[in-house]
Each structure stands twice: as structure tokens, then as C-alpha cells.
Image (tube, rainbow, N blue to C red; front, top):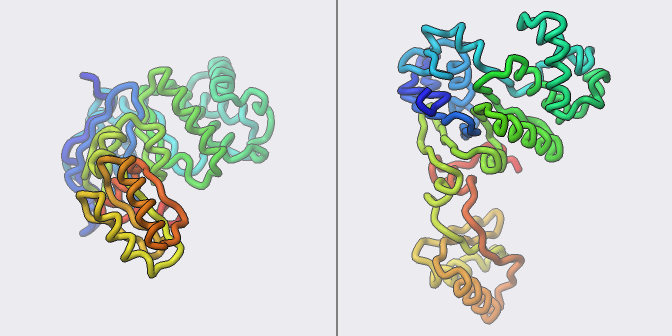
Length: 319
């Protein structure tokens, strides 16, 4: 597979006049988590559906595990796992019964299905809850069981399409831990998400997609460097003080300070971080500006996304 578990070149998918994917390119290295980051409607789920052979492409080409997704679709399906935005497990059955059922659906036979179910329950830390009804599971436990079900055949490539949608922070952390364990065992994961923190923590490389096109591809740190280095950020108590803060911050930056009048925040990139922070804090105090918060921070993926697309992801905008 020449080091790549997934490759897509100039993918096209159209629904009437709408282009869901527009010459979309993607390369995912073996044994890594690769994040596909973008807002609703950007084309993330469409890309996953094509790569997992659920829908056909209208143009371009793609391979998964070295197999062509059109000409070798049956072989591709035998090498992949797929988990969507909502758990596909049966809440009436127990965790063990769910996994054994999936094993039989994949033609493992009764004995092998039982053995594989027991292995996965242990791997995903669900042994203690194995014989409880899934309806009594927490959200994080359901998602871990769903991940376990997608691993019945030990796939080479696992597609996770927004796997932590709707989960609380604790449950999301449980899923992250399970994903890291899968990759440590050699599985390649393509993760689509709107959660910027999720992409930052899990992915070794991220592709940003917007309006069906890949608009950036790099490591999380590489993407953040697109925005620049450290940034000074000042939050004031009064909106009327923002113009004065912009003037003060402008003295310590080569860039143009940005002001958010809704959040009463002014921020700008700086090179000499300590000197800039000290000078701005002292000057604002001398001028009688009431400051709620002042500090330095690294650019976030939210900054990157805003710079590349001109808007925030829906998750961040709603936060």
C-alpha cells in the first residue's frame, strides 16, 4: 500500500446541480489517525461514504487498503470498519449479545463469534457490563460498544464519522482512549469531526474540507503555524474601551489587532511575548482601562479554521 491506507484523487460527487465533492484529494498514512475537519455540509460524510463503498463516485479515483473502491468494492468492504454518528447497536440486547450477533452476521460461526465478542469486550473495557442490556449503558459505553462492533473482523482501516456527536466530555474522553488503543494496535483511522479539540488531540494529520474541496492538509501544529505564533489577548469590561485597547496592542504587533465587540476581546500576534504582555498590561493600567483578562495563547484550530474558511465550525459557534 506504499505507506498509505487511503488515497483519493480528484473525487467528484454531484447531487443535481450541487457538488458535494469538488476535486477532493486525500492521503492517509497507515497506522495513524487522520482528521477530516469541516462544518456541516462540507463533504466529510460524502467522502467517507465513497471511501467505504456505500455510494459511487462521479469522478476521480480512490483506493482503500490498496484496493480500488469501484472495481474492488467487495474486497474493500472486507478490509474496513465503519461507525457513524449514532450507535448502531441494539439497546434491547446485552453488549455480549450484540457483538455475537455481529460476528454471526459476518459469518464467523457461533464459537468464533463468542470468542471474538469476549476479546472485544475486554479490549474496550466493557467486560463488567457485558451481560447488561445496552439500554442501561452510558453514552460513552454505547459508543465504545459500537466501535467494538466495527472491529469484529479486525479491519485494516476504520472510518469514524463524527463518533462523539452528542456525548458529554467524559464520554467523549472514553471514546478517544479507545481510538488511541486501536491505532496503537495498527489500525488506521479516518476521523471526521466538527470538534476542534477532538481533531487536535487525536489526529497526527488533519485535512480541512470546505465546500467539497480540501483547502489545507498538515499536522495540527503545522496548521496552527499558518496563523502565526503566540497571540496576546485582552478582554475588557467596557465596550467603549476597545478602540483604546486596539491602539495599545498595535504598538507591540506587526499585524493588525482584531477586535470582537461581542466578547469584548482584542487579540493580535506577537513575537516578543513577555515584553508585549508586560508593556500592554502596564499601559492599560496607566490609562485606567479596566481589564477582565489578559494573557498569551497559542493559535487554536478554531483560529486556523476561521482563517481558512472565514467562519467557525458549528460546534464552536454554538459553544
